[in-house]
Structures are given as C-alpha cells and as structure tokens.
Length: 627
Image 1 (cartoon, helix red, strand yellow):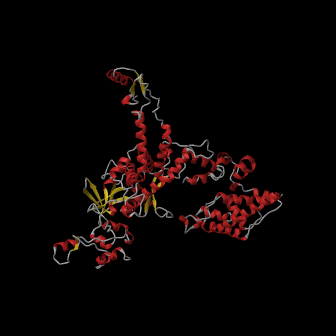
Image 2 (cartoon, rainbow, N blue to C red):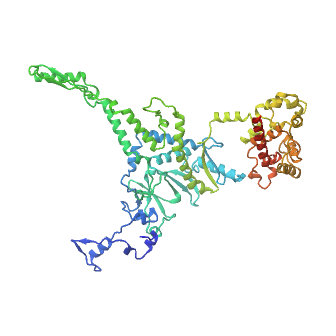
Image 3 (cartoon, one colour):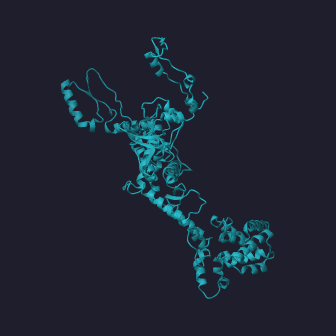
C-alpha cells in the first residue's frame, strides 16, 4: 500500500484496498442478503491488516492497533512493565541511591546564578543581542516567576527546587516527566505544577484526527487516570509530557523507555544474590556437619537426648542445625565426615554483586563512585593509569547528568519560558564552571601579564586611575605615582620599578634602543595606514582611550619612523595580550571609534601590525639560533 495514511482514510474505496475477513459459520459463508442479521454481523466483523511501515505517522497506529481501553493509549510491547512494577523496582536500595543522587545533582540547578556558578539564569535567545533596560526588568520578572513556580496564589509552598526534584524522580523511574501549565481565563500562564507521571496517559485519537492523519493541538491530548477513572483532561500546550529516551517502536505508542525496563534481569539477579546471602547469614543454607552417636541407647531415650541437644546448640532462627543420628556399634555401622558448609567465596559473591551494581549504574549513565561504591582495577596487581574517583564522578556527570539537565532545560523553555516571552530562554549553567579556588589561581596567574584594569574588566568592574600597570606590580607603581616627579622620570630613575611596569607605560626607551641597536626597522605601508586611521578617528571624534605610549606608537608607525627590535617585540606582546580587540564590539557596531579596544588595536598597527610583528619576532628568533 503506497498511499499515505490520510489519503487512505479519506479514500471511499479503502475497504477494497485491504484484505477482508468474512464471518464464517459452520464452514459456510453467509449469503450476503441485505437485512439478514448474520450478514449485518459479518459487516461489523470486517478487520483490516495494517502494515506499520505503511503508516506515515507512528501516532496513528494507536487508532488501529489493539486497544484495551476506549479512551487512552497504553504500551503494548512484550517486555513492558506497569508503572506499579517500575515504582517497586525503584525502591531497591541500589536503584534508590542512583535516583536520589541524580535528583540531588539536578536540584543544585534550582537556584538563580548571576555568574557562572551552578544554577540557572534567564537570557536572550539571540546571544548577540544586547539586553536593554526593559529586557533586564523582564529577566528579573521571569526569574522570580520561575523561582516561585508562578504566582504565589497557585501553590505557596511549592519552590523551584521542589518542582525539579519531583519531576526528575518521575523521569528517572518512568521516563515520563509531567507538569501542568496553569492558565487563567485569558489563557495567560499563571504557574506550573508537577503532576504524578504514573497517572498520565495519551488520549486516543478522535475520528476527526484519524481522518486528518494528525493530532489536533486544540483537542484533548492527555488524560489523568486514577483508579481506572479519568479525573482530568489536558491539551498539548497545558501539560508537558517529557520523554528523555524516545524510540520508534510502534508497540511503545510514543511512550518512554525507562532504564528500569533494561534492568529487569539485573534486578532479579541482584535480589536473588541478596536473598541467598541473607539466608546464609540468618538461617544457614545447610548444616555444618553431622554428629554420629554409637550407642545401644533406647530409641525413645535417644530422641529425648536429641531434642535437648538441639536446644543447646541450634543457632538463632534455627540456623546451622546439626543432624544427630544413632549408629549400632555391634553392626559395624559408621558414617564418614562430610563438610556440608558452603563458602560465599566459591560463588565469588562480592565480584558478582559488584558486576550487578556496575551494570545498574552504567544503564543510568552513572559512575558507581557517585553513590559510594569506589572500584579500582579488580583482578589486577597494579594499574599505571587509573582515574581517581573524583575524575570518574566528573565523567559520570558528563554522561548522565548533562543530558538530563539538557532535557529539563528544553521542557521548561518550550512549555513555560517561550509561552511567557519567546525572546528569552532559561539556561542551566555551572557544569563547566571552575571552583572558587581554581578561579583565584587563574586570576593570580593573570596578574603576572595583565594590567589591573584588564583583570577588573573580566569581572565587569570599572577601570580605575593608574590601573594600566601589570597587576602584580601595581602597588610599587602606585607608590611612584604619588611622588612629585612625572611618572616617566620616576620610571627612568627606578630600574626595579621600570621592569615591573607594563610595556605600554615605557615611553623613552625607544630612542636609546635605536641608538644602541645595530639595526633599525620601518613599518610597512599597511601598518602605517592602520595607525593613521586611529589618529584620524582621535582627531575627528576625540577619544580618551589608551595611554600616551599607545598614541606615541601610533605616530611612530604612521610617520614610518625608525623603530628598534625591542619595540617590535613590544608590539607583538601587545597584540598577544589584547587578542580579540580587532573585532568591534557589537555595542559600537555603527560607531567603531567609540570601541577603545578596536581603536588602540589600530593605533598599534591593527591586524597588519600583528602579522608583521609576529613575522619579525620569528625572524629574530631564527637569527639568534643561527648565531
């Protein structure tokens, strides 16, 4: 059948396309006589053979497949588990610890984060767009809305963290995350509430939807069923039915694929191993041995003796009960010593349990060390390359937590944020963030080659006066700046501070360098043109950007004055430290002369100056190596 689904159902001759099954009674086909009751029954008994590959939309299969219920769709696969079974499996201590760990990790993103720490933030969907003042107010409004899960009149006790914990738990158990989007009479969102995922079913398609070949978004799409009774109905936009692990299996009816469905055999093995071991410790699986008494004692007296013996030696809960038998010494009867005790080591119980725990964790994309089971290289004498537990935890989060958070982010954006204002989106951040200690270490390293104002700029702080010195030596430079002499003279008279100061702050070295140098160099025309452009902008529009050294460098390059090897190296150092300034800030797209980074990049020769200084530095290096 090559027709599309909706073409097939709209066709008036669809009954002749598909094979029909006629009603047969006593091997005789009922005569097709109009009005005959058996003929009417036969007409109603017609069935059609549907090939799933002929159906354009997998959701349409729910309309022709076998249905146990007239109102909603259920998973009909062979290996399906009921929601009650999934819930019971999730209560096993290992599975419970896996789920709770992931829930705790996801809940860490429930707090607003103004920087790159763990949490969430509301941003513009267009990353290149600069938020206006009204946008910033809207961001604050949406952030408060998310933190309270709507307006306080919806559910005063509900918090965003509680919301995340509930829906993530359901997702990990049923692979079904459900929450209701609450609206007022004006169809505006007023809040969102978690819904028990185990009670939510997809509604059966109506006759009109079957004829159209697709679900109507304005019709009832989901039902809440409790005790086999429909208690609530939802449209598509009013209820999130989030699936983390979708599949194309036609029998799944667009349901999720819970991890616990894959772990049925593993869970059975785990429970069997635990029951076996518990039985061995609690009751004893078998006797430790047999006691044989050689005596002509009267049988009644022997049974009395055996009862008293059992009372003295039997363990707790009748464990390790030792058989006691009577032998006739004259009949030459005897019994050999047989050790009936078993060893857990023979079954490699620890290794077997470890394998099952690792399998369970791997299906949930989690490292066992995240739930407290730290395994090394079992069976190996040593390991040269072995990831430490902390590294394995990070790897586990990359495999399991990141996709989980990404799914949560997509659901919240689609059903809540974009319904409020489609210009914004929610972002969960912090998975790639550094610890506070690492950030401090990086800033300390930056202090050796970046000026104080440059470091302040990375933290969105305003520049300060005399902040254009290398941060490590800012204190010494500040002391000199407080003297009555000009800064340039102070630097000349203080060799120690002279080495400390930023290269951009040394003005008078070039002349002495040229006098001492055997060779001098003149910048190419394209470099001079870039520097002249910066001077023209300064003259035409005025500019307070840069330092005196920077503008002196621009005049040297534009006038094609002689410069030394030291100056060229300083040019290369400048471009290396200010990488990225060649691109105009989008904020100054129409007025590039207001971008201090761009104008000073041009003052030092622009991209042409960068390429030329890099080429010359490499040339100096080769010449030095040849000497």
